[in-house]
Length: 97
Image 1 (cartoon, rainbow, N blue to C red):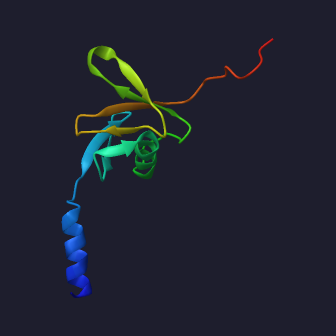
Image 2: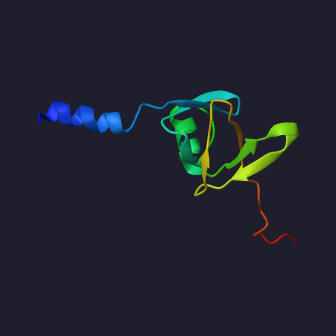
């Protein structure tokens, strides 16, 4: 089998999948339906969304509800998936006087 044919066979095993989610109302293209919170933020940053990796990622659900997606959490996304990435202002570890 030639190298080109072998490469074609490998690519046929993994069909091209592109999912466009929205982060802070901006479209973000992802290469798979199963992603981690960190992968969503990394993709958003690479595609020009003004967020940072330490931001909290909130999935926007029906009826105004939200769910925090942790960096290590793997979720399934669709073209209808929407997220807000917001600064992590949790100062609970700080001592206030």
